[in-house]
Length: 345
Ligand code: SAH
Ligand code: SF4
Image (cartoon, rainbow, N blue to C red; front, side, top):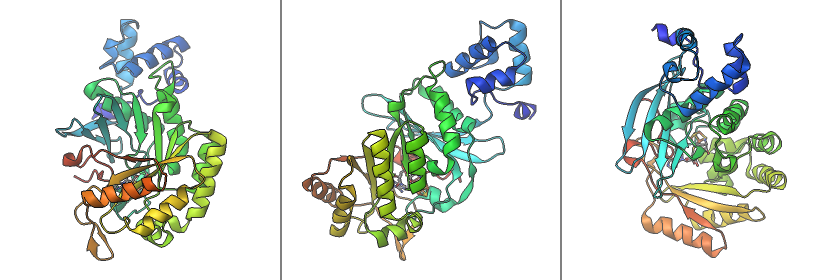
């Protein structure tokens, strides 16, 4: 229990760490920062520090403010971690491994989510609070402790990242710091449910990363029902914000659509999605809806799309000249796939 009250150091920026360690000279802070970025198991392992200093760090601080409280591994290699924060809030983070063995960290930005998308488990769990930059950074370190180096980040865990942009910006600055983890900005993707002023803020002030919009459908009425955020952030305003982002960032944006059987796979959805994409430099990422028991829409339980339905939808978008990718389903058996994060168990 005593351990709990010691401040964790791994989530701090170099400057904040140097402040936390004052009056130690700045170069000591830099050494500690580098060790933490390497994922040392203890202060004792920081071998270029005097033994007395290692001991006093150990007495005054802990490596992390959060801890892994549960771990589940899928046979496809995906690992889902439940992480308990200092105030006992629980969040989830996922390690994804692709066919080439490349590892991606899927990070959460909020405990829960206030957006209430009807097809998402996180959305139905409600919202507790924003995560701090340190809590976002520590998820990366906890995931890296599992199977070694991670090259990519997707900000697609629990929560709406554009509602916690200042802390996310700080977290990504720490993770891309060449003195520390030194991750490439090109390998970070943020996914949003669509907040127009947030997209503009991202375009103007960063973080510098790739952007994906969870469009789901271009049909206004349907999107308002599936994703209530649409009522205050209508589709034309989102498109304007994306065009602004592209003018400033000169980067392709991804449009994601989670396909739900019989709901957003209609002819109308093909047309409205293609219309939305018009004029944008974009590609469409299709995701089969991952089952979550108990979710209903207009009185009927949601269902995964059939293979034929999914392929027909993809094919029709391709016929309209869109570049379409299909997201591989990973971690389904451990409920570590998109939209299955809940941290209730
Ligand atoms: N809040 C952000 C990022 C986290 S959700 C956002 O909504 O974009 C990441 C992705 O998972 C989103 O594209 C979302 O549409 C998708 N998703 C949510 N629930 C899902 C489910 N049950 N099956 C498949 N994808 C889902
Ligand atoms: Fe929140 Fe994204 Fe889930 Fe919607 S899909 S409830 S924005 S986490």
